[in-house]
Image (cartoon, rainbow, N blue to C red; front, side):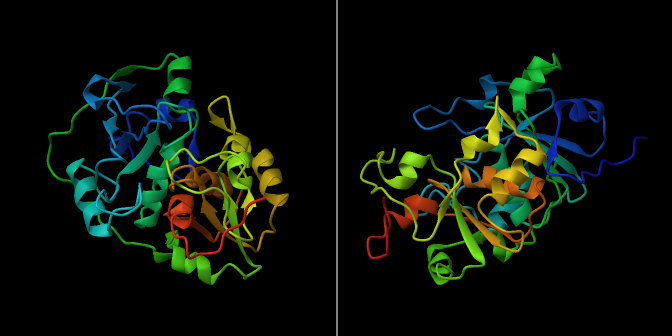
Length: 283
């Protein structure tokens, strides 16, 4: 019998996944979200990595009753829905998306927020997997027994706007915004109709696209340089974006680079820019 898999890094290669695909406790999740302007496809018609299950960020693992998009579900809801995928507390989870590295870090961060650390993002996602000619098939619908996954929520994983407002003047807490430079500066409109432009006061801009090259996260050395240009190693990092998705790419990059004390502002600019009584900056 194979030894249960233990993942000790936040990012794995397609070669690593292929070599470990027979591990008895391996779970592969497709956490694809459409990019802005794209439509979500029915998972039953989608090609994915062999034996992968669909992790539905938009409809299952976001609170669709919340005021702002992509709000994280409660730990109890997360636990129940993960159990419905047959996931157990001693499983090892690898998450990918069909863009390369785009929405998979959001699913990775959700698992981390719920106290689960035996999880990693697949670098390059499905495009890199197919480029290596590894096996793929239609995504499966899980119809087995419930798993025994247990949530143990880490309250520092997500901040709301009140918490972000509290730390604005704290020089040891750095807010990094993953949106494009033009959106950060307020010179390009937000893709969400009616949402004002600008950025959170005292925040710094690190577009998530600067951490991605050809669908893959850049090297650890390059990541360290990107972050070191903006912050120091003692800083607590708070990541923001449009609605909490690409902020998690920065969180993944920071963890690969060796940073600790990481937090995602879940409402991000959609929340902040909608609350007109709060301060705002634009260039």
